[in-house]
Length: 166
Image (cartoon, rainbow, N blue to C red; front, side, top):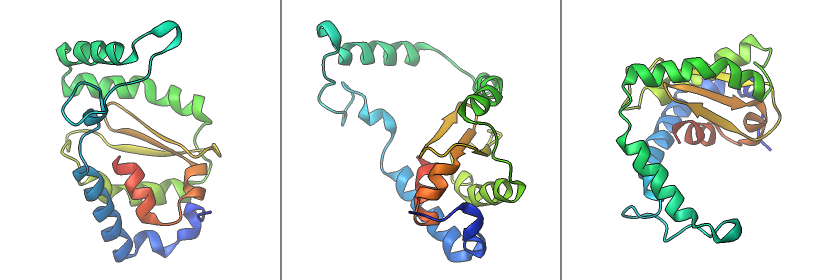
C-alpha cells in the first residue's frame, strides 16, 4: 500500500519526483490516444461483446462516436460544461477532503503534469475527494478529482502522475 499524500512530504517537491512524474506523464501521453480503444478505429480492439438480448455493443459505440464527432464544442463550451458539473460531482463523490495541506500538496504535485498538456487554455483544477475508493475522474474543461483512496494505494509519486496524465 502507498502512503498518504501528506506523508510524502518533501518527496512531492523533490526535483527527482517532479522530473519522474513529468516523465511518467510524457510516457502516458505518448502511449496513444484513448480513441485507439474504440472499435472500428485503426488500432482499436476487434469488437465489444454483445450485450443483453444480443445487442451489438460495438455498433452502439460506433454510433455514439459518430454523433460526438459531428458535435462541434468550443473550448468555452467545454469549460462551461466542466464548471457546471464539478461541484455536484465532488459532492456526489464524497466531498472535498478536509485537509488544506493535502489539497495544496496535490495541486502543487499536479502543476508539472498539467504543464505537459496540449490544452494550456483550460483552467486546470484538481481536488482531493474524501472517499476511500481507489478512483480518480476528470470532467471536460480541465476539472480533475482524485479520491484519497487512490493516494493511499499508489506506491510512488510517478504512479500518481501516470494516473493524472491518463
